[in-house]
Each structure stands twice: as C-alpha cells, then as structure tokens.
Image (cartoon, rainbow, N blue to C red; front, side):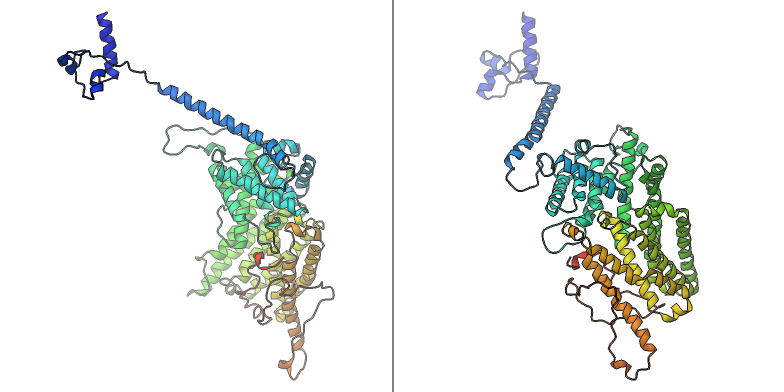
Length: 602
C-alpha cells in the first residue's frame, strides 16, 4: 500500500510542483529529493498533499478536433451555396437582373436552357472556327457543359449574344463577377484550366462588348488585364511545360511531388490554351507595339506540332502554321525594333545597307517559302490562317517601307518590288475578307479584327505611296496595274457599305462605320489631291497658284461623316501626307493610332 501511495505521489509530483498547503499560502513549495512531504509542511507538521493532476489531451486529439471543425465549415458552406439558389429566385422574381453568385444564369431565370442551347450551337458553328484555341466537343450537351465547366459556359453565353444589349451587358458583368470571385475573392478556389478557357473566350470577342451605358464605346475592355491573368494561371499551373517537367515542388521542400498523369483530351485542351495565350499576346503586342509577355517558344511550337499530328479536331491542323507564322511575325518586328541593326547614319553606309538587305532578304525568303508550302485550298477555307498570312506579309512591307530607320537603306528597285508585293498581298487579303458571308463579320475574333484593320490601313498607305509618284508608275507599269487591280476606293466603299448594313448589331458594340468612314474620307482626300496635282501639271494655267485644288468625288461614294460628326477635328495641314516616293517618312502618319477607338464617337 505504501509503495502504491508513493508511486501516486511521485506521479502527481511530476505533474504538480506545489502542494495545496503552500499553494493556499502562496509560498514557494520546496521539497528535499527523495521525500514525499515538502520542507515547509514537515517543519510545521502540517498535512502535505497534492491536487490530482488532470491528464493533458494528446496532440492527435487536437488534430481530430480541428479536422472536425473544418468539415463542419465545409458542410455549412455547401448548404449555403445550394440553398441560396431557391431563396434568390423567390426573392428576385419581380426585381431587375442583378449580378449574384447564388446559382447560375439559368437557375435565376436570366436565360432558359433552350436559349442557352441555341447560343452554344451558334458559338460552335459561327465563332469557334475563328478561335481554335478553345474547343467544345460536339457531343457535349449544354447541360453537361453547364455542370462540368460553369465558367466557360457563362463566357460562351456572354460572347454569343449579338442583339439583346441588356442581356449582353448583364452577362458581361456576371462573367467579370464570377472571374473576380474565382481569382481574387475566393481564396479557396484553385486555379484551373476551365478558368483559363473562360478568360480566352471572353477576350477573344472582347471588341464586341456592350460596355457601360453611354454614347461612346472605347477599345476592348480589360483585354490586357484578362490576358495577363490567363497567362499567370498558365504559369501557376505549369501548363507551358511538358507533363514530365511539372514537378510542382518548390526548392525548399524535401518531398518531391510526382506529376499527375493527364488524360489525352485534357492534355490537348491545355496545349490549345497555352497556344491561345501566346498567340493573343504576340499578335496584339506586335500590331499595337507593346511589350509581349508570352512570345513564341520552342515548347509552344512543340505543342502545336503534337496537336497537328495527334489532334482530335480539324482545327488542330492549322495551329502549327499559326505558331510558325507568328514566330516570323516577331522576327520581322525585331528587325524593325532592334537597335543593333545597322542604319544609314553609321560611318560605313555601304556595309550597313548590305547588312540590312541581307536581313531583309532572309526574312522575305523565309516568308515566301512558307507561303508556298500552304496550299491555296487550305488557306481559302481557313480565314484565321489566311488573315495571319496576309498580315505577316504586309507587316514586312510596313517595316521595309514605312520605318524611319530602314527606308533610306533600300535601293529603288528593292522598294518597288516590296511595294508591288504589298499591293498584291493587300488585294488577296480583301478577296479573302469579302468571301465571308454578309453579316457574319460580327463573329471575327479580336486578333482577326486587329489584323483586318492593320491590313486596311497599310493598304491605304501603299496605294497612296503609288499614287504620289507618277514617274515611278510610268517606269514600272506593274505598279499601276496592281493599283488598278486593288482599287482601294472600291474596297473602302465595300467595307463601309457592309458595315452600314449591320444596323441591328449596333447596340451590342459592333459598329465601326464611323471609323471606316473616317478612313475612307482621309484616303480619298489625299488620293484625289494627288490625282488633281497630276492633272494640273498638264494644263497651261497662267495663275496656277490662285487655283483652289479640285475635290473629286467618286460616282459610287456613300455619304460621308465629317470630322465633327465622328468626333475628329478636320486637319488643316497640307493634303500631301509625305513628299513622294521614294522619300516616304510618314513619322506623323494620322493613321498611326488607328487602334484607339476611344477618340471616335461610335
């Protein structure tokens, strides 16, 4: 019994260091080693006993408690997300549409399931061929897409609405709200391929957004922000790397996390998304002259090559050509922007010219060889590839003829060849554009919209360059023949007429008639100034300087908008935008900022 009591006291003493007598007196309790009674109680002959100690809970029990609390929180959040849908529907039946996260747009009665199915079918038939980077399988139903990829489903609905401005504006705001919740507000939501696909669809047709209420519409809203967000998600998920290199293991960790095997269809969706991010970033940055945050890389081209060989859909065959043409596009841009490229201002102009000609001819040869590899049948049935091919060809003309540092280095014969090449390419680009059925321009993607506008403006420059030098046209009959074949007056007239015929789509952000009419008026003002100057040179007029320049109007010209009507002041400067070929240095070209639609009242 005594030994048992000793063991109990010893066990208690290991846990409680002060006896109850000393604790009540608030005196330090000291005990001689080996004694069961403290020194104070032994001296005062008092009873010395220790309070029974409570057993401490093990750490594993605390973990279990935390896990149970986490499960409870998840259950409550799940009940709130499921139960909030019916409450919102009952509460908002008589109220206007407002952005909410409770249930999707079908649950809240914004669109019906039948309307969503019709919009999805329209997206597949009319829009997806212009953007092969996000593919919805033909066998996937609207209900399956809604359940498996809700954000992509919402983005598709948003860009597919073409006539109901209020519905389009609401869906745009809903898409932005859901995206903000996924990427900023909800910290528990993980990055996913679906989020990237939804962002790509949203910005692919961002130029048609209804935007805020008001008389003016500016350039595509939030394009750069959304694109960089998609690129950051690609980097976060390591989609720009092959599967075997996706370690997901920071350098400070000990354990290595092996990559998870991907089903083939998911891996191909990831590759398409990566190519889409790179294509959008590269194309928009080169044309708008901004820094490219996701340029061409060997891995991106490897993804495109793999899709062209093993791709499930016919659109995968064009990806490798788009990537390689974009690589040439970037190389041509570097030819213009690289400060190390020789210029005529150096001490050895002959050697500098030879170096520049070598670089130019190399680019031109590569582009011609690649163009020859693409059959006309393939490009004629693929407008996105045809637009890319024509844009790269015309951009080479832009760099060679209209860049201030390079124009003086090219001989006359080379510049004539480039001009003829540009005029022929411009004609081919508009032939391809006019093959699109009337009233279907609304379905062109943002990159095609950029490329078409760039080709239109550069074609105007080339036509005016040819019109500015009569002697060159007389010495080079092919230049005049190509100008007549291009017929830029007729091209602009056709573009304006097609745009004006799409009145029902004006309110949904697809109305560029004001911008096109401004370009048309600008071109015809300078073009007829050149032709009138040539006529004046053949007339024997005594008071030539007193004659007012004649303004010739084409017989087939539609009514114009004046500068005041479209929000742009009419220029009071001389009609001649440049002295004349070959000394063309259009550093103050009025069309230089053609992407800035915010200055035009549309």
